[in-house]
Image (cartoon, rainbow, N blue to C red; front, side, top):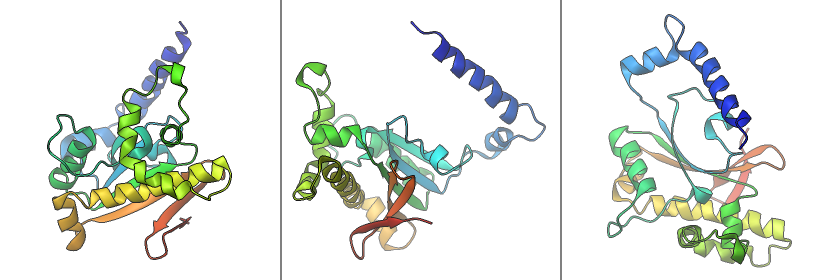
Length: 211
């Protein structure tokens, strides 16, 4: 086993502690006194290359983040037993009163490639990923006629964001706050290939650069 990767984390924590805890009035001291009060929730992917706080250069306390495979929001339902993303959404909206929810998708998403049949049968991966990715099953149609595999994947990645935005509105307390203006929903797409951040424009169903 390579202990160097763990040592890197421990050394990193030392630098983090020095920066945030060893000053007279550090950010964390303020956060401990005042509690967390983020105005933005981000639904992001587990992909190690797509950290919302790093991409947006945010400080601790700025974002309330839930990460899952392919940054999916499931539709509202109460018959299942485990609702990790829904529970985070409930706490953000009803407990923290966030004003914005961002669904942050990205290029080269492994979950989307799994949806498109990219899992090897002998890899042992798929028992949980395959049923989870059924949330975005409707996005497959967007790959039809999209051309190359890369373009097809990009089309499905962006379509999955639109599905999650639609699913967000299936939660009654999300829909109520959107309708009365207390909450705004955003669909963002991180194009790692070109270093761009795109935003979904519902008026024309396009993703355009955020500048």
